[in-house]
Image 1 (cartoon, rainbow, N blue to C red):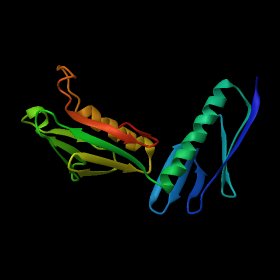
Image 2: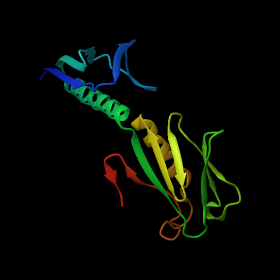
Image 3: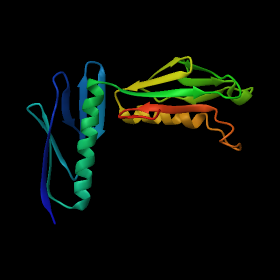
Length: 182
């Protein structure tokens, strides 16, 4: 059954939104987020609101409609308060040392499982990474970049070829937006 869909998302004060070249651009101070728009959904910015419309929407268009609304809400939330991920470095066998190389934009893990070479994990552009002893904090206005950076760090210290019950060393996500794992 085809239905008409309509949703209005309020834009808070201080955030500017513009639709240009099939792309929604939101700005606040020096932060800027861009999102490509789907052709099936009409998006307009009028009077401090983002208006999403789909005429005679099918099942596929309804799914895209909900997803686009969630993306726009995440953009607004990211510009008002940054998304924050927390990771913890766990070392059972060998004490590891974690630091950030700002010149190469990498996270450096030294002495992981007693390895002689350092593990270097590429960080995503547009993400702030702070290291305090065994805690790593990732902040960004873009939830996708922050999540990808946290996943890259977790994956970069994965132990392979050994019993995971014994070798529990690594860097693990302990907190992400909307969820705490401890």
